Amino acid sequence: MNDHPIRLPWVGSEYENTRVLIMGESHHCDPADEFSLDLTIRTVLDACNGTLPSAFFNDIKDAVLGNSSNETSSEEFWSQYAFANFCQGAVIRKEGSPLTNATTQMYRSGEQAFPTIISLLKPRKILLFSRKCWSEYTKNIPTVSRDRKNSPILCPDDKEAESHYYESDELCFAVNCLSLCHPSSWKRFKQNADYWHPVINEFLSQSALTDSAIF
Image 1 (cartoon, rainbow, N blue to C red):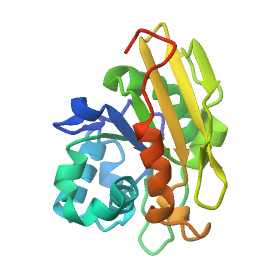
Image 2: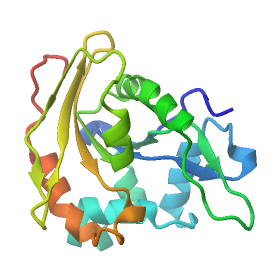
Image 3: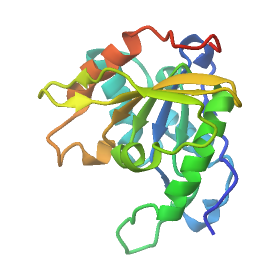
């Protein structure tokens, strides 16, 4: 089944300097890794050394850094951030078949795990690269004491990127979260890393001060 314990997140060696958590949507893996708790860590390590057959992590790096991305190695970039996937289960690759999406159970499990991940990592800001997770599974997060919409950030095509503030008295966290499209959907929406870079840059440059003294 897919209601797994929380997978260990990637935490870069310089994470405390940024306290920015980057979140994807779900893992796709071979059957042998379905229950691996260190799957996320090993995946980011593969992205750092260039052996991961996926553009996902490079797209995020380009979106965060913009024109300076080529001057920064993947290893240096990911040393500054934490990374976790929202869904706790993993989509199993089947030879000869197209990739499938995460199940509803995986998303709901991620919704339950979300505040625990924040509590463990204590990020000031989250970049959530999944509009599906944002729109359907961040509206009823357990243990959140206070939440509010922040002012949206204007995108290059005048659309708005939503941002939200979450705070938990029980788990002692306060964090601002930005909603972004998953890189796999960028081409469909005529977006790319250059489209998202100014949005991310504005969000990260905003003050992290909140209603709380938890920070």
